[in-house]
Image (cartoon, rainbow, N blue to C red):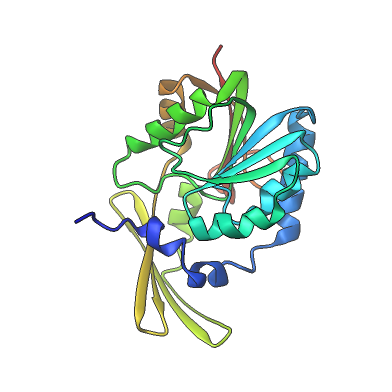
Length: 241
């Protein structure tokens, strides 16, 4: 019997979408605009939104780029995202470790901590190897990740949220270099999130192993300089020719 993997079940629930539905849409759109402006990204490019969720960022990208593809493991999320389908925007279901789209992109975006989900750290290399395979010569990957130093130093251990009469009891802990979030729904159903604490040095090693070179780092969605107190760890890395 196959062991259930947390992100395969949790991301496909209505609870997941409800809990995170208030993520700031303006902030997300401004982040995309800031990336395009700061990195001087060519509008004639083809881009991949890897782990695209319900497609909100891919939709924003499609206003600028010639062609945008979104891919995500969650069938429910992709079914929602497909409502945005248009001539230059398409969505597919796939696992970031082994998807195959039989094409290469100019840029790959992996946004809002959609990395580091696996029990085995080495599986991150499968993701990056696959990204390398799907990038054109001198292509660019953008990884937007939590800042592990900030997370450890500012951890909120317990929290309760009431959303549409649903009670979410949330506890967080650091264990074996993971941040683990336990989520109880109305004190009955239980889900959890488990994300690796990957710092810049670790990213540098696994990116180099996958034939990437880090180009720039940023610490927030305004793309200010990164340091240990930054809200985010945002990395751009170039595929080595």
